[in-house]
Length: 302
Image (cartoon, rainbow, N blue to C red; front, side, top):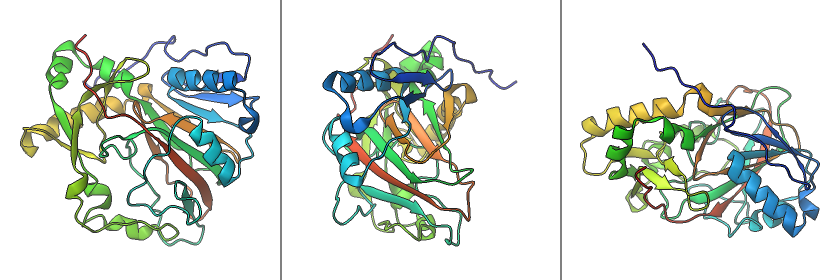
């Protein structure tokens, strides 16, 4: 019989704040943020916004009017810019990726179109990703998110203790290596792929400690975590497949409906995401930045 997954009603509750309105969107993670102007946010408002991000994992900040320069300024309030490998940024904005799918494109392939956390193969993967919706389809084009705290907590004590001493092998091979020909379908973006990626293969603990909340996180994802250190592929694959099946339980996910002027910010250290390709023939235009994070550290045995 398949596992029955659930989470508690108290998991994703809003913390009171005078700076904006918070409305949780699911029991697992995610919150809509209203009544806020990111271009005129006070220092105390920024502190409250970061706390909301720690509380909910991903924020959908509605009704924002942001130029590319203003998006850069908002990003830098959360930390230093991250590095964007394999994707050519905007010529005059080296830290901004123009994520666009034109209505005239000939394939339904979308950028980042599988469950993942951004650039987990980096020595210091992004702490946060910011994605601003400039032009969105009337229907479709949603983004899915999940909560990797809950995935970690769901595991048995025995499995968590086993995973505690193991490292996942993170590689851009599937996404950007010699056989990553799906990138040819991204007609309106400049993607670098097809070359040797061995220099970007790294190991990170399978269970990490979140540097701000102190909680344990299951730190692996289907796109970039391709094995477990010290194991043969035949040994690691069943373990990773089970972990991914837990992470993708509907009870641990939420779905965001885009509207023009929405800025999504998610904590890449404890959240996966995936765009939904259900708008083939319509246009979708976004601007994306990342904030550099810390080198992942091993979680605690609870």
